[in-house]
Length: 213
Image 1: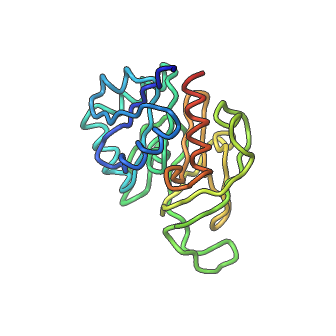
Image 2: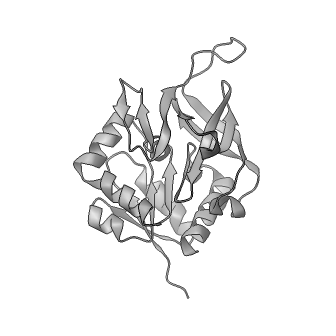
């Protein structure tokens, strides 16, 4: 039986690590909770989950030296999967509780949802519940996923990409927003695969296939 790829489940004090670890195990990966930068650099892939505030997450990553470890792992070609806050921290900055610089791996910023929908009706924030994501573009992850599916969201902020091509999945909530972003070395989603039942399992299986490739 092939050895399961070791996945660094980055522990920076802002992640729902246990449920994500269980979900990764179901996709025949070996997640290991890691707070040591050297261990993160040595893994076959990196998963950055997260719930909570952007500024706290960035502060914790930098304090532990995990920001550089994540960057170096991505640059070395180790597949990165960001979940929820793990998507948001990739961008240049966020306006949550004041402007905070992010990791700067993708150009753009993170902004709060508007208080009203495009037709003027009040928009409930946070965006909580199931919503449909339509995927587009090309990426190794998308080769093993459906063109669209429903996933579970919990968030008040969303990424505003500077390069439209970086948004490889879009969802409608107060207008269209980026629900999945990617470059050749990373893939990240605003929703929670670990809470998205079979659709989430399919996405994590696609990540496992990417890591093995």
